[in-house]
Image (cartoon, rainbow, N blue to C red; front, side, top):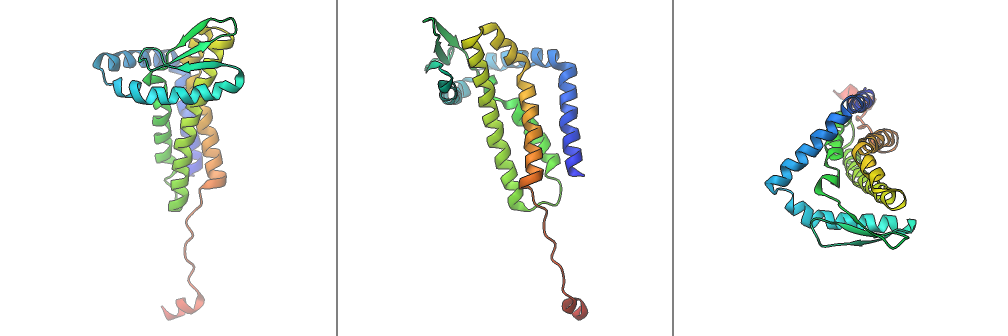
Amino acid sequence: MEKKRTFNQIFLILAVILMVLPAIVTFSSMLTSLFNSMGWYVWLQKWAVPWQSRLVAVMVKPLGINSYVTNSIDISMIIKKWNGQMLPVVLEWNCLGWQSMIMLLITLISGLSGKYSFYSRVETIVFGIVGTFLSNLFRMAIIVSLAYYWSSFAAIIVHDYFAMFVAVGWMIFFWWFSYGYILEEKKTPILSDHKISEA
């Protein structure tokens, strides 16, 4: 029952995303601008973004993309293209994937409501957090690769409209794998005939 409810929840999120995708993109941009004006993003932009930018640089290196992580708040990476052109890449705090982490939290509340063992629940939560983090790195690596091999415009389109589909795709795989290979139901103790007769 929990499996069906969790997958229904994921598909409902996907349906809502498809219906209101332009509004989500606009709202996300407005929210980003609001937080930027308040200055709440500075810590994330100063410490978390450069660290994640280095991980993205490592991921795109095997694809032949030479990139340099900067210490600037405005420009996170610089890509050296095959023609010698230096292309600046801006990774903001909003690119870290907080939306997919919220989606993970929502599905965890529903998906772990069954009678599962404590350790399998912990394993599922850790797997979900690590996998969501890696899926966000994968998404950013795709965007950087598009900017390098195609154009900045293509990278922006994918950034605005592709991110949610990566998150939903990961959620579907995550729950399929968790229900199939990680989550274990609690074993209820079985009373022996001897104990039953004593009772």
